[in-house]
Image (cartoon, rainbow, N blue to C red):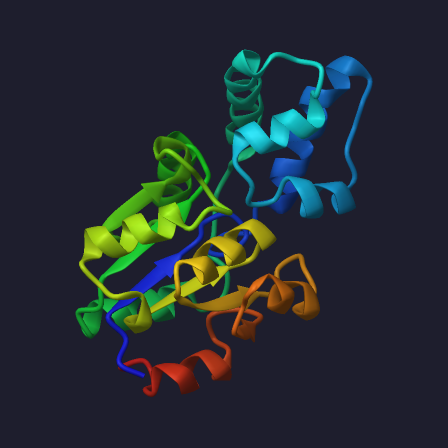
Length: 220
């Protein structure tokens, strides 16, 4: 396959942050003597934009208040960030892309402040040609707009790109944009990822299926 771009989700794909996000939501919800479990998080929160998340959590609250609630939650999340490490194989594939002059982008629903903190904390920010933030667009994931925007920025056709996602919203977004999407087995089952539109399933970026599709081993 002739690859002209690699597009990466951030949370749960490049870095394992699900536990930190769940903790942050529960710290926020505790103010109302409420909580969410991991099942609710995976089905209704992971990868979705803030307006959908907070509409589900606070259906009786005016939507004008969602932004403030989201900002509080994200501050709680960033307060937990210590030394951060990418998931296995991230440096391998980013180095491969750099050596082969393949442009790469992050496509995320995370706020830019979070994205910057995570990418810089992992020491990989310099690898990326673009960081597309769903919340800065008219529509975030699961709409295809974030991925279509990344393709436009990188001037690449969807048929020559690969996307990597761990959430249902993210897989739906990338697949709807016409991109061959790898579902990451970070928190969901293979059947769920495939139903959402993932064409390939991998556990991390060292997976043989990924390197087989790329058609080359990473340069040594």
